[in-house]
Image (tube, rainbow, N blue to C red; front, top):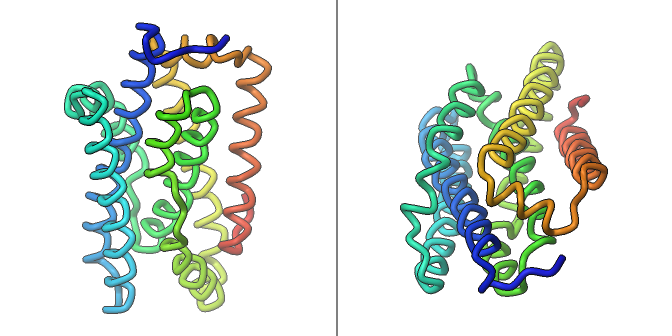
Length: 221
């Protein structure tokens, strides 16, 4: 079923989608900026701070575009404060390396989910989403850091693999919970033609991409 921005249900779903995407970018910036202070070297502090700056730039672009669409960014983001806070509390890193893996894997899962959702939106909304979903490779430094850490301490591999699996489970649970509790988003998926089988296939693709991302880090999924 094709939607247009004038459809009230569709418009509400777009507000939710842009709101959750923007708040995700904002919380990623805040946490990555804090994690940069824990980095063991100036080079890594700089790399992590640069990654945080990218998240904030993408957040700012989203806010600007929402305002141009006459969407109140604060009101759009507000419904997602509690679920995001709960997610980050459940996935609080215990070490610097866990924070790095979360930045690489956790954000990767989230952005893969939003890319899937972009298939159901109109061209203008997809353009807005693309601003926040662009991968400029600024997280690639994480790959070499994690791989080097595993070489230095082979026991870290198992711990970080378990951590990656936990991140996947928590991220998928959060995505499902948000979609269920926000009627507009749920209708968005169903109205966009995604039946239960299609939704299941989407989560399978998310899991496959997670496996590929973990393999880049030298970790088993």
